[in-house]
Amino acid sequence: MNEGDVVDRPRGLLVFATILAVTTTWLGIRLPAGIASYREIFASLGVLPPPLTRAVLAIPYAWLIFMALAVPLLVWVSSKPRVTRRELGRMKFALRAVLIFTLLAYGLAAVAIYLPIMKMRAAV
Image (tube, rainbow, N blue to C red; front, side, top):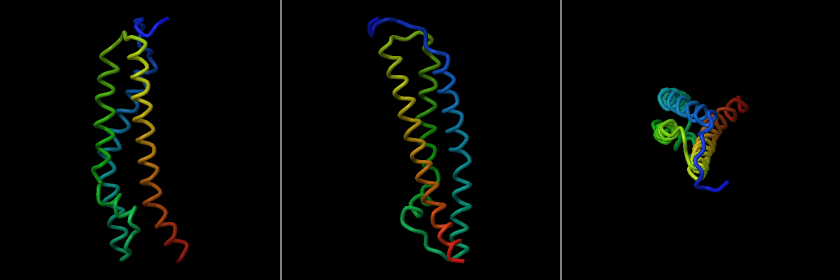
């Protein structure tokens, strides 16, 4: 088997790309409202959040970046039922990279928002 061989695209790859695109789209649409709520919470408490939290709260629409990455990947994966092994490897790499990038960003945002809230709760 060589990199130029044409193979069927695995169905699981299409499922993974679809789930990633749907999830990032849904979160990209919903998170700005959620972030606005947290901004209101910090403002109503009269607390100046740490710099990382302020950065997350200042860019509520940044989550659309993940949608902008995942949807074209879905289009690419779904448009090619047969691919070369090399292109299949590129598809897998791109999907994994977007997933990891997305999870790291969401994790960082969760820590940035919830850590100050937990610290305030402990002080009360």
